[in-house]
Image (cartoon, rainbow, N blue to C red):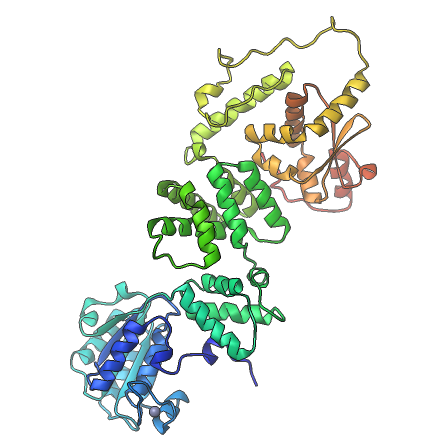
Length: 541
Ligand SMILES: [Zn+2]
């Protein structure tokens, strides 16, 4: 037997089974019980909230030979014929593919005929907002004076596109998005019937991904079940949908709250290494900031899983709403740019930098000025050979980091000259390489505070070793190796080392094995000789 999608297989058969819309189903059942059924209904609400399901149940309930408290029996001849989609009295029209006035005229021509089996002819028009203006006008005439045996059920996700003349002739019901807890309890009972076990956090995550839509939640569940055996766990769900798990996303939010660019970029690198795609990371973060806003605004009535509420509780007070709105703007820019710029990695990294560095938000001129002055400073530092002044991260004001020396910034000490005692140059380099290895964290921090953030990202996780008067940066990823070997990047690394250690050090970018290490140029040439093409966008400064 062909596999039937869960949402079809478990589509509610009576009003009592429709999830989360009791305010609607109860009213309609009362109308059926009292014999006061309307002749035109308008069901509106987001996708997957039960509009079509309720319309189908209604079409049976009004025609059922033996209804049970307003619900269809689903057993009588009429119910079975409607369920089998062979009853001529119930017609479903998808307005998305039948938009024209002729389609509506076709329906109207059938309106005058009396029903063949049941009491009513029911016309369900799905996506009714797609009808043309002419089609709406044709429909309007029939809605003004419908025959007693006709019921129209119009369903739409776009209520604002329905003409007021149509609205005023319909009984309108607004379907609510379904709460996470309602979705979870429903999919729990479905899985129980299917004999499948699942952890609570897995189900809560499926419901969260479904975003208030039962149909979407069940489709995601279908997808997860198809790709996993045994108990359905949170890990399996996040793997199947390629999503970044909540904990990681909220850890990112923590980095943003602390303004910790280095940590955010390191986390980003870890996500990418473990196979998460850039789009999912950016969109996941966007939804986290949205959730934090919603949670802050309406804490008591916020619908979310227990775990998610814990995450929210732990970080909500670290943000104010305008800041969060700005975070959403930054991520929206990033996601929109995915369409026009192919290097999604760079876009994500820039977004993370902007998120963790509020002072540079939306002010590119000051950002450029800041970087230029820092680069000038760095240049002066590496030439002068003195230790870099510690930049106050809490005071990113341009004036304070002016390239020209001021009273606030110590002038460079004169470099050590000939009057110093003679020393063995190779020994000095040897110890400088060891010092650089020992102070590697300071060197990456110096790069970060000088705006070389993308370079820092490339350097995360590199294995640093000092040997033979040389600092070896062992990088397993060949693309990263190539990017690091570019002159501008090597220069920046050398400058940072000079600023921390106080002298020049030989730097070699190598693969994991030091013995097979080659210099950046050698590596480029040897890989080039192997015919490997490199992307041209690797100048990451
Ligand atoms: Zn029946």
